[in-house]
Picture 1: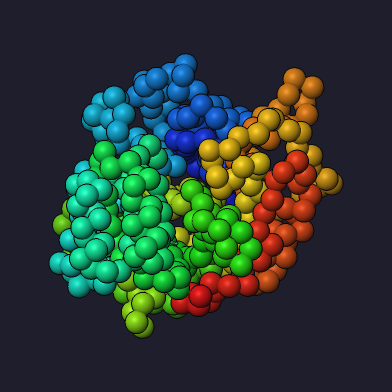
Picture 2 (picture 1 turned 45 degrees about the horizontal axis):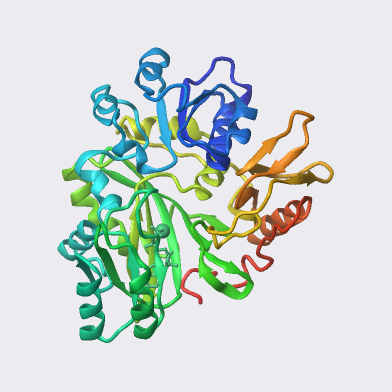
Length: 425
Ligand SMILES: Nc1ncnc2c1ncn2[C@@H]1O[C@H](COP(=O)(O)OP(=O)(O)O)[C@@H](O)[C@H]1O
Ligand SMILES: [Mg+2]
């Protein structure tokens, strides 16, 4: 049972972000008894968070440090690692904020791809063969020398990176894409290892790794895993997995435990892995709650607020699970132009038919003065259902996404039919 009926507020949470993630954490943690507010870090996707509680727009409040001094939140949950690159970062860290994200040396696990590669080498975790190229000419030379396909990535991760991951499947694809990429920060080349991908999410606190879920993201834009790898996934599955049934934590997270302890790592860790020649390899690590998996995890735990707040303080954790909530399915309603974000359309009306029976989190949506909702961008909404069975979660998510109508929008109709169980193509 959630502590929604508990007498006193559990404490307070501040969410840093916009859109579906922010709306979802505001509501799920409020449902768990916490007081919640948000600092809206970007200029779009404010409607959903504003439905849930007090929000501070970064344009009115360019620096959130006074807000944090005043409200003294028990946990601060960021949607991305952009907090680390702000003019206020130093002042923020000096407050020793209860941030649900590692800082300092530990943050490098996500921020610097070549650091993650070296760390994996040091602790015996399989990582695809990868090179940092300072520029396109160096990258081309590596592709010609190695004669294999490479995925092109930003060497330094941030939402504003000049390169977004481009998955090339042959050496010819790689050579054809290289002239297109902005090499101003260099290029991280990672050998393409196929499509047998899966993820695992844990919380690290007090030196221990607590597995939460194994997950899958449907990153290709269209049914049948056709089209490009979109900027954010079109669908996702999570399975409650504290026992690490699928073995991803054993292969890709637990070997790093000495390093987690050495650097005082505390916060979420999500690994994206790929099964290649019978072994899981690391594609990347992320160090925050995932944009679509985070809200589902918050709905599956019976004590999400206490768990996240303890993790932010590097304290021992005791996550508890709600009965009957073993699987989650997230579906994204994409708008006109997605996944080709160069294309933009007009604002079009958005209709919801009937009464939703699962969570619907708004992304790029606004309300007109007359109350009519409008789609304002490429990702309109995330629909997230939790159930005791995988089929139950998928069926419920689909019955709800069909309630949403907006001209030119689409969603994948085949989530769960491939890439699951983990290790399948
Ligand atoms: N080496 C690789 N081999 C095969 N597919 C890859 C590889 N690297 C990335 N991908 C695909 O691209 C997606 C995004 O890559 P990732 O490293 O997670 O970067 P980001 O999430 O920062 O874009 C992965 O989830 C996977 O589908
Ligand atoms: Mg990724």
